[in-house]
Amino acid sequence: MRYMWVILLTLFTVKLYAADNIVIVSIDGLRWQEVFRGYQDDVLNLEQFNKQKEPLVNQFGGETKQLKRAKLMPFLWQEIATKGVLLGNRDINSNMSLTNDMWFSYPGYNELLTGKADPKINSNQANPNPNVTILEWLDQQATFSGKVAAFGSWDVFPAIINRQRSQLPINAGFESANWANLSEKSKWLNQLQKQIPSPWHNVRLDAFTSGFAFEYIDAHLPKVIYLALGETDDYAHQGNYPEYLKGARRSDQIIESLWLKLQQISQYKNNTNLIITVDHGRGENAQTWQHHASPKAIKGYLKGLNKHPDGIVGADQVWFAAMGPDVKKMGEVSGGETYQLNQIAATALQLVGMKYQSYAKDIGLPLPVVKR
Image 1 (cartoon, rainbow, N blue to C red):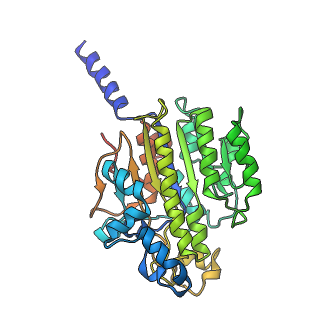
Image 2 (image 1 turned 180 degrees about the vertical axis):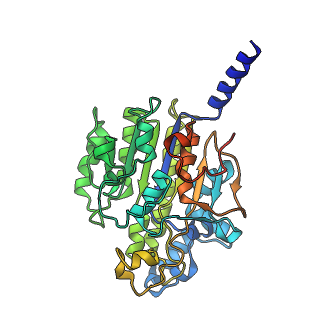
Image 3 (image 1 turned 45 degrees about the horizontal axis):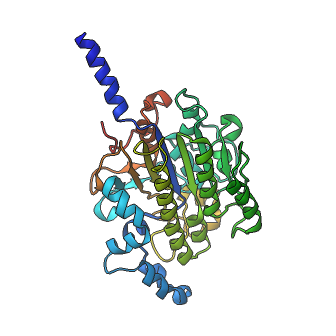
């Protein structure tokens, strides 16, 4: 009988430290520099931003980088930093990097969602991913079957998650909501998306991506939610630093709205872990901040950046944040070992109580942020 109680207590303990739901948010190409320092002076001081500088300084400025970053992403710094963990501030020797040798989006998202780099993924072309992501794998497990969904601003996500093979509900690019029992707001978003032009040919505004995600949550209550925001990367590629900053602020607002929404739904309240990260970094200074590419990528897919033969320094630098009932309250981490993007997949699996070794044994180890 004594051993039976030990077994029951062990099972209870496992359940106690495994929330039923997880949200993974990626913010495409948002640099650690803005996340941990706020806006960068040498970029904002570029001549083309003279007319926009004063209102941006009024909105996001401060005497210290701590004040600046808190104005840029207040939910991250007022809520997540006090209740969860942040990794990647290189100013305090908290380093996080890519393991793939491309330093752009598709290879980064594959690494994020599968836990390892794939050298065969060397472009952003919408080729179906041969690798099974943790989203697809979780959907194959009884606990999460039919309870996984993904939403992305970039139209390549159906290929990255391999919708044809995985059969997951994925709403990305300029796709309309097409699930059962559409709400009136979903129908309105479908119409509005067709009426409001995007600045880009293959990426929609994040308001539509998050809007569809929110409506799907109301309708289907998924346990695993992947939300991939994209505005920051595309405004950066345009060299539009003011809108890049505003895109970061909007991303923070979307994450806050999503978190507050989930706390109003019984399935998710105090029963959901949140992960936030990126697919790659960017250049470090005013001349390179808008770009990202490795030396290998510049010799191939991104040969248009061949004036940077050594690659875009800093584009392999990423960051991570998390909060939830199973996440250690560590705050802004300083020092320690260098962490990698390939560790997030195993971390996410741990946060929903799954053994990452059952998914794959050759992926990055979990980050040391999960309660035991």
